[in-house]
Length: 374
Ligand SMILES: Cc1ncc(COP(=O)(O)O)c(C=O)c1O
Image 1 (cartoon, helix red, strand yellow):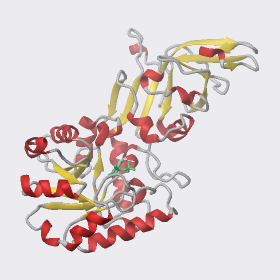
Image 2 (cartoon, rainbow, N blue to C red):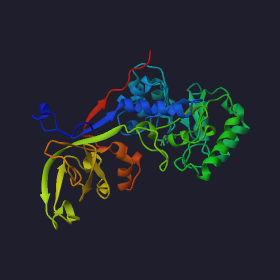
Image 3 (cartoon, rainbow, N blue to C red):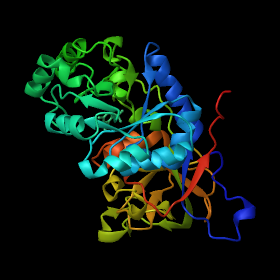
Image 4 (cartoon, rainbow, N blue to C red):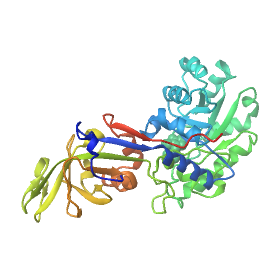
């Protein structure tokens, strides 16, 4: 936030909490991923409404940045992504596969299902062999994808794949956020082995954390989500990605409390000295998870203001002790931004969950992205 003071022009209306989403930062994060894996293409995972940030705006911004492959979880999300592309050409893969009743819908929006088991594979061969698809090998996560036996069956029967339009082979890393985890190398070895049997089909293995591993993990197309939105894929290392989202909420009241006074529901905070506090117009209804009251903080003009007491549905109280300039109602407090990781940690969760739970009542402000290069 550049300035914590309310613009006088805004004083007529009550300033509403807003979610500021920086499309240019998302585009720069896309470019940073491209630099990490210059030999690969970079796709974008835009499921769950682009991790809560708004697929209708994020998808075109990524397309402007050069992205031509998108991944969603559900067919409905794929339809939204296709609509957001407004006629621009791009492949959209649907991670959760397909139900036979969805085939028309997939065709209509030109969505490519990811095949996760042999039953689905044979169903596709029977019902829609012309529909482009991806095949997902489960190399050790035991979540979705062809397990070891199904993978071996496919390797032993390469003719099964003939006549199908398989556009990608993929697998997903369980522990890419821990670069030294031994499962990374085991998954890589299993994926490389399966992929070697179908060398002409492009392969996709690396999510955000995988993009930060060495080039052996990159294959033909990266599949990042979190890094695009400024999350830190490998905590403990420097984060090469910029924050792309922040909450800005106005101060409603400023008050002095004395040593021994409490603040908020349950009176769990008691002041140990006289202090100035502010009540801010955002709360857990906006996704400022109640648990992040313990250790979470906002910022006024860049200065940290720790959250004190319990976060309420619409209100959060912060400690102004470190702020040297006067604070008044209407001044802005920002949350998340560069602090999204510690806030998620304070809430005993991960940045992914924090982002997708951001509330719906915010006024959403999108900072513009760069236009597409001609
Ligand atoms: C199959 C698959 N690929 C890629 C991603 C993107 O992962 P990340 O957000 O860690 O980059 C996800 C996210 O959950 C996923 O489920």
